[in-house]
Image (cartoon, rainbow, N blue to C red):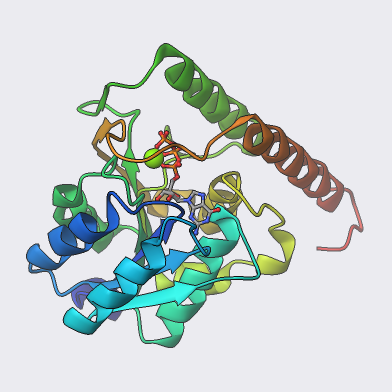
Amino acid sequence: MSEHERQPPAVWVVLPTYNEVGNIARMIETLASLDLNLRILVVDDASPDGTAEIASQMSRQYPDVHVICRTEERGLGTAYLAGFRYAIEAGAGAVLTMDSDFSHDPKTIPALIQALHCADVVIGSRYVPGSRIVNWSAYRRGLSAWANRFARRLFALPTHDCTSGFRLYRKEVLQAIPWHRVRSTGYSFLVETLYWATRQDPTRVKEVPICFVDRTEGQSKMGWREAFWGIVHLLRLGVELSRDQRPGAYR
Ligand SMILES: Nc1nc2c(ncn2[C@@H]2O[C@H](COP(=O)(O)OP(=O)(O)OP(=O)(O)O)[C@@H](O)[C@H]2O)c(=O)[nH]1
Ligand SMILES: [Mg+2]
């Protein structure tokens, strides 16, 4: 067992938020109450509903809560990236991402951290035995199942859930990703990141079953525009990768 597998890494939780005023305070309180010594980083894109103000107020009450308020940029993918950079710079040994709307149950976090003992990337997965999806419409289930099949086939990904935002990465994996090649700014960032994070060693990813529950507060930001641009970005990467494999191609 290597040194980094023995030592529990400092875990930073990156919470992307856009209009999560009904969830953010309870989410921060719940994470803080887990007693796992988590550092919490809210990455908000100037939500008009005042999410960032609430998070900033809470950061004064909880010293382990940090807030990035982005005013120039919008997008789930670039929010994750800003969170990764900030957390690693601040000393994170591992970075956990999760939605701020309670679709990802904070109580599952210990199981994800446990699984990191024998992995570099851990996925909170909706598509392995023992997992459940609660209250999701047939449309969302269909879209998610299709997106997963599409991504898995296109990139030969080693996981059943390729689009889950509930993930834990060792910092070394994030540092090794060629970010200049990741162009997705929205939800498809998750697929691109998974591809690069598992490319070197697909055996170092583990899936932990989760119970995914549809949000009860706030609104989804996943729409047709996101889906369209997600497909475009993934097809672009697929074409680039097949060009890389041509003899003599630049890598
Ligand atoms: N910073 C930032 N966060 C975002 C953006 N879009 C979505 N989010 C956050 O990313 C997480 C996932 O977004 P959701 O709208 O819940 O997407 P989803 O889970 O596919 O949709 P639902 O199933 O309807 O909840 C939530 O915490 C959002 O607030 C964005 O453009 N910027
Ligand atoms: Mg959600």
